[in-house]
Amino acid sequence: MNKSSRFAVSVHILTLLALKSTPVPSSYIAASVNTNPAMIRRILVMLGNAGLTRACMGANGGTSLARAPSDIPLLEIYRAVDDPVVLSLHHSAPNTHCPVGCRITEVLENVIDRAEAAMQATLADISVADVVEKLQLEAHPA
Image (spheres, rainbow, N blue to C red):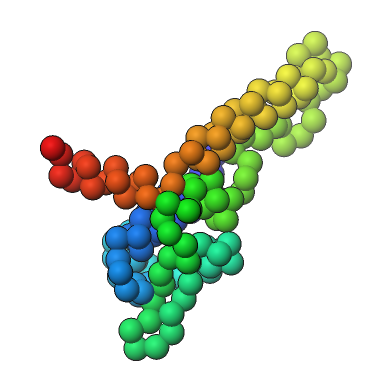
């Protein structure tokens, strides 16, 4: 199975930007994520198109958040960078003459819809600010 890491990288990027008061160059972000700047720039384009980041040109250019971290739910990040379908059905139609194959798609559609709704509800309840807070609490326990 092919899994995308764009969501995790995007949350990393936006969390990093939330901690910085000035625009951050893609090379700095890439060093934090431990990947190449070209991959970061591709993701930054997606995040920018979704209105989550803004590019700042010039000698001190880079990327910054377009909104407050508390106004960026993880669900919005997920929708900006990943295929919104986590689970999928068979790639080819099951055998309709089989007692399982004739109804499995109908049953699985319901299960998949419920699972995706639960995941999206969870992501909608967590913001970039929540991620920042969790990082800071774990870095500096009381």
